Image (tube, rainbow, N blue to C red; front, side):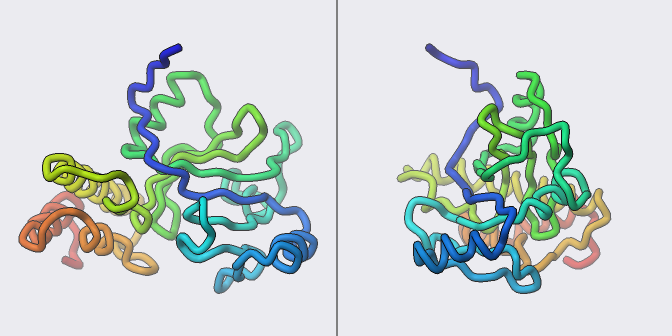
Length: 219
């Protein structure tokens, strides 16, 4: 059976992990018993995560406390009674978050988070899967790398560069419209251009496009 996937282009699994209700019990199992390389996030000791690609099979694995997942979706510390409590979260990196979000809406899925920019620079749409997973489609600039997608010809690499520049323009424009600072945390914007397939000669032009599109005063 073929499906209409217009607007939906999943690149890879960006992250996966349990949603925890007892941080201590989960830490004992995943760290003490299984020996997973999980470390507390600075400033958020209850959120245990791996470094990028530190655990084979997934780019990012983390124990996400239920209260924090609830705040991410509902701006509240408790999960609402009218929805199933998710046992795990999963995120899929997509090529175009706007088109992918529209595709989910067109299929009638109820979104918990609709195309939102997180403080760390990730753009995300969240919903509950039929199995009760807290699923997300994302665009995460620090994860987007030509080398992680597929072997490319010169033509497909150039197309990827145009896609990355377009994604970064959308990222910068949304931050500007939301009144957020252009640079955030680890300066995610610059990393996109440094790791893109665009040549060094094209990067200044890319930054000019970002500055022009956002009316940024920091460029």
